[in-house]
Structures are given as structure tokens and as C-alpha cells.
Amino acid sequence: MQMLIGIAEGGADAERLDYLIHGVRSELLQLEVDAVEPVRAGVPPPGSAAVDVAAMGALLVSLGGSAESLTQMMTALRSWVGRTPAARMIEMTVGDRTLRLSDASLAQQDRMIDEFVTAIREG
Image (cartoon, rainbow, N blue to C red; front, side, top):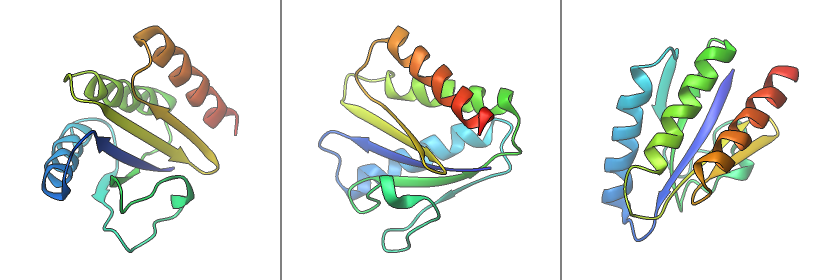
């Protein structure tokens, strides 16, 4: 399974986005993922319709398909969004399903993540 992850932070310039992308990539590589690769602007990755890679930083993540590793990754991304007072947003796309996490409450984010993971597993 491949997931496209768009990353944005309010007021971030290209240098800051690059820094954020590398930080998120390092965190995701510590999880049970097969690969995490930065997506360069101008090279539209599979499933990129929902993410404007010119306005956001983007990563393409390859997962083995385990629901547990998917949930683990989603939890790490949710944690990243809430780690700073800066306005951050993560947009995750698998196939035709997209989830955007930003300033929702933790309970709302948990519910959205659970629904997203369930929808992906049920295909």
C-alpha cells in the first residue's frame, strides 16, 4: 500500500518545508514502513490529485499493509500536527481516500483516524 502525505505549516517557506519533510520522514522511518521518500514538486506521484505538492511538502510512504503499522503511522502524524503552536496540517491519501488533520480536537482526530483506517482496510 502506498500513502501520499502532504505536510504544511502556516507561514513556512520552502526551506522550512524541506526541514519539516526531513523531520517527519525520520520519524516515519522508525516505524514499520517499507519506504518513505520525499516527493519533488513537478513530479506528480500516484494518487496526488488531493495534494498540491507545490504548496506543501510531500512524502510517499510504502507500507506492508498491516492495519497496525497504518494505525501506528497515523498516530505519529497526529502527534506531529499537535507538537507545536504553529498551524500545521497533514493530508494523507490512499487511493481515492483522503484524510486531513489540522486543528481538530484530539478526540475528533482519533475518530477521523479510526474511520480512515477502517475504510482503507475494508477497501
